[in-house]
Length: 286
Image (cartoon, rainbow, N blue to C red; front, side, top):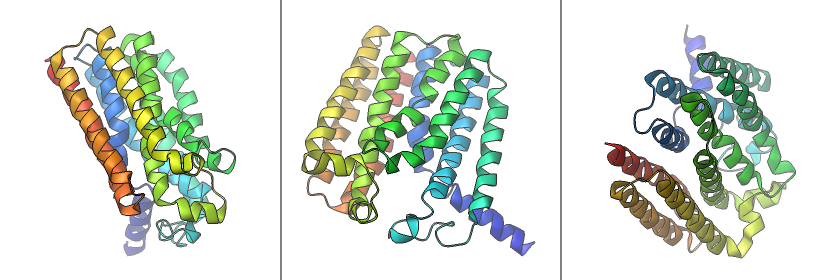
């Protein structure tokens, strides 16, 4: 019994259930999409399925990421104690955990319409292939955004059975947002990544990382303003965007000196960015 408890605990750590920040950062844009697609009243079943789906697919993403990085993680200070890197979970075990999580999520998707089910295969492919991108391109953060944001078009498909222009604009905003916050995350590991040959936008942007991320944040806010105008949203939504804009300024201050703990703090702060936008949406539709 004790051995089983230990295995389950290691799987829990492998799926990062002990660090729920990633769940929230994934969940906020999903909720944005559901609230807009449902005009403030998303279908309860769709809401439950997508919320559970985010939790499961984020966990699956963490598992396949650690499997893909099993040869890199032991050489990085921040990741050397992860279950696979530390030898506490075998790579084959991790693949089984990944499969179980994905199949459970797919079982939930089967409760949705056929359009959403078809889109889920694209989302699953993006999530499974993302961890390997850092070997081939300096833009794995953009690929992460494409994978993490795919819940947005899926939410519109589930709620309305089609994806309008506003859905694709929101998807682009979420893709760029993930690129920004994961670049801040990558700034923490930049020395280790350079040493082991892993690529990232933090390396690609170099000394221009602050200017580029700030420019992208302006584009993101512009896209969210466009979404608000297309949906004829009112002042509560724009009040939420104003708070989000203030958080962007705060994040730029945090990364200004390239101090690693502050860069990680900037990454974590994006949780509040997501919440600010969602709160504005909820209040506006109320």
